[in-house]
Length: 236
Image (cartoon, rainbow, N blue to C red):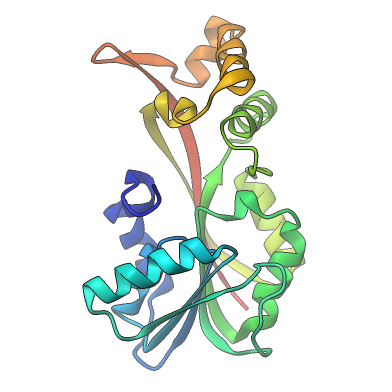
């Protein structure tokens, strides 16, 4: 799924990650929760060496297969937990983390690990699911995503991201919220039983104004709903 997912292979978003990261040929980079390795591969075109980590062996094996099929030589992969990364302090010039932080069970610990691993002045770029500065949408979107995927922990508002990063010792220099209007199947695909019923029940309870806030509309006869994201750049 991650290998071919439109969300994870989005060329425009990957391009913006690389632009914010601005990797250099003498840099060593770390891509945390790399999944199938798409962000690591994108960064590797500018960096000297990229290491991608993921919690699951299956993802690392898939990323390794993709690396081999594409003939990429400056990317390595290993299994590691984002909350306890097996590298020495100040080991990296660049850290990236894309579409994964909303699964981290202890986000503050993960951010402090990122800060520990970056060299002074090193670059951090995070791209993740987000929610707007609106309490109802925040609570409702997080509820929907927990029904969609039980491993979901939390999507954070852009202002919340800035506060957490500053508390971890980063200097934030870019906060870029953006939106994608996606098919409702982005929430329902692969969901069965009670969780699927709960998604539809939650949507059925929305008032007209709330439906408008979610841009819950038909596009070419198919229901679509809004998803929110944020791209963040910071320095150690």
